[in-house]
Amino acid sequence: MVRRLAWLTVGAFALLLPLALLRMNAWPVVDAPITAAFNQFARRSETLDTLARRGMELYSMKGLAALALVYAAFVDARTVSARRMLVAAAVGACISGLASRAAQIVLPRLPRPLVDPAMHFTAPYGMEDDGIGHWNSFPSDTAALLFGLAAAILIVNRRWGLVALAIAVLAGLLRIYCGRHYPTDILAGAALGAGFALGFATLAAKWQASARVTELFMRWRGALAALAFFFAGHAAMQFNEPRAIATQIVQLFAHL
Image (cartoon, one colour):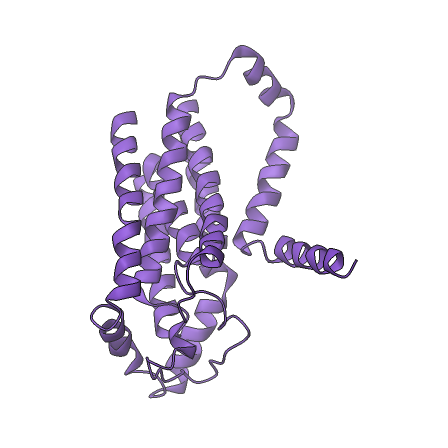
């Protein structure tokens, strides 16, 4: 089990470099045709465009539903080791969303389809640049979180994991249709999220808690459960509030 998780982790991270190269050097061959295939349906039906846009904007499609399935898998897990791996993998998935955002800052700027002049993207009805058009498109932090959570659940519960995977795929397709991301953005985010989730699960499978650590966990299990719920809630909203606070703090110090 541990060896398989380790190899899957390596495989997921190994996909990142070729996907980055495809995004930067093979955009006309890979991303543009697939995006155009989706985009041909834009503005044909106001109802379809509205459903796609509203569906993409739902917090349920950004992480809330997937995190609810993490709780479902946790309750259904029959062993302590399975729960430990699930929690560790879910934390890894959440961290992957932050890692994806950091990668967007560090990597060369790659425009999103909605504002990419080379794409000639037809915006669906009601779809406008709401300020994120200047953000780097690669990789998708939403995909990192959702596919990471799906991978975390699949480790311990196939049924709930497949539901989470279906949500992640649907969310990715909606983001392509609405011009938020190119396909390789979604695939890279998925690889990053799965890599973090599987990597954290591997570490959890190897780690054997000491009696002292187990005692501390049991003593503070209520506080830890509250902290986990609080963290999961912010993860479902993609840490919008902490990021806004951090931005305000940076701006405050910049004016000192």
